[in-house]
Image 1 (tube, rainbow, N blue to C red):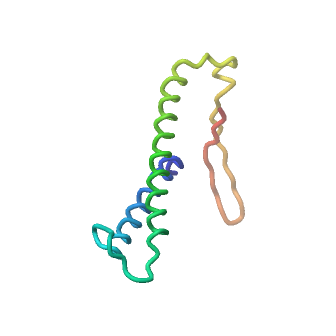
Image 2: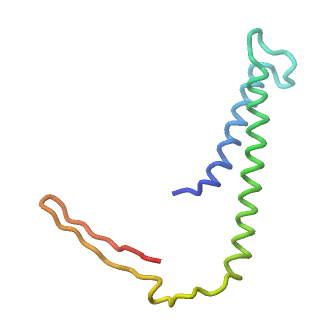
Image 3: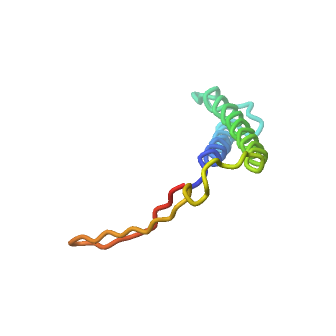
Length: 107
């Protein structure tokens, strides 16, 4: 499963590129001569908003990574023993029309 933060960081960038492309198609490369009836303000606002979201989610990702780099190595040791805190348990299931199994992890 992809990281939700990473996923949200990319979506605004893709939408911003789509809005910029639409603006260029409807108003020209210099965006000075829009077609009649075209709502320039809506796509321009979308382009600006998406760029802000891209920067915001990107900054949040950098901060989260920085916190993880500092917090994980400097965290105090756990108070419970490792043997009781972590376990792998195999399990199986047999039914009239199926057979299955797996491993359950407990941390």
